[in-house]
Length: 452
Image 1 (spheres, one colour):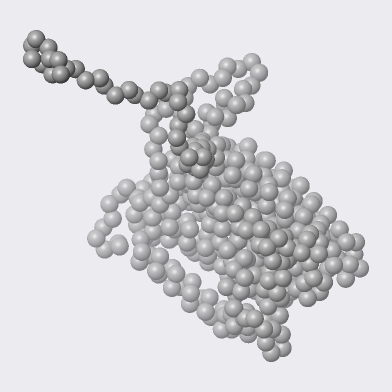
Image 2: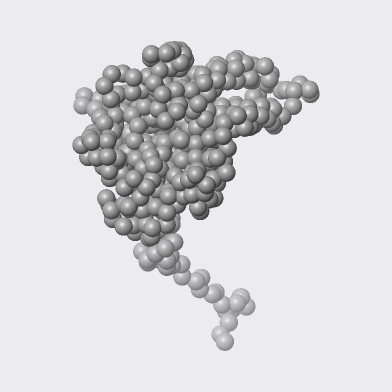
């Protein structure tokens, strides 16, 4: 081997670097996952999930209401599209409320908290006045508006509790009062119990469960200690046990969990036939409009048990699609609540997400025979204008909060320039470092040793 005069070893060539123009050897699946992650982390992801998911659930619900309610309407000597037309009217009004709520500033939402709460309490009191309140299926929870139109004030109590509770906790957090138990509990828990008492006077156990879930969601977001949670939960369980023990009807519903036979006196008829509907649907269902159980076998096919008819006509694919839409909606609500710096937005978004998610879980769990039948509709999906209107207003709240995120504002400003105005050239990073937050916040004030 030849050597240099300086007796140095011969220079070795450095290995060639791969050219940047060469295609990556990354598998198509890995590339797809990478693109999905990038799309999932975009600023407008929550906005599109809330808007698209809620609209898809509402439209699919209208289709299923039309399919599931035809036989019931004909049995009542009404046109086959009777319930669909009423639901379509409610959805149209709800769309206007959604658009209005999505364009309202946060300050106006906070200003509406007390009027909505006062109106809900007034209507709940009027329900119990003879001649004004109307009983439906044994529950005194309705007010007649004339003709075939009725309103259920307890549905608006959910929206009232979310807005008022979020505003109350946010103001106390600003004053650093949440470190004291009395300020965390009062007046949130007494006012919630007042709403629960007014609703329970009419016998609506399902709505009280939803309001209790909203209360726990607000307390959790406010950073309530474990002992406080345990105390409130114990009181709620005791009151619930008393309400169940004093009502044979509720005891029968509890006994029908997991039932596969109607039982004596057909006490489990509804739950069992809901299982029959799901079981006969198969993978892709019997076809839209081809349900057998809605022909008088399944009670409340277009309201509380519309998910069973969906499983029978659209099969497992249809029910999984509905579950995926609710899961996306819940994730987007959690994302909005977790990334905001505004306490009111965090509590309101968390309360709305708790409301819709808990109600969907209770309704679907009852149809699957995993939970007792609570008589609550599937949000945005079941028939019922009183439930649809406040829910769509709450979805409008989430849309407004999602649009108000710094990254979402910048993205929308770039995509929707106004005439006569320059596009916003500053990026989100110009406003300061982004802080990724968790939903659950602890008060910054130190607690005393005897408070936890």
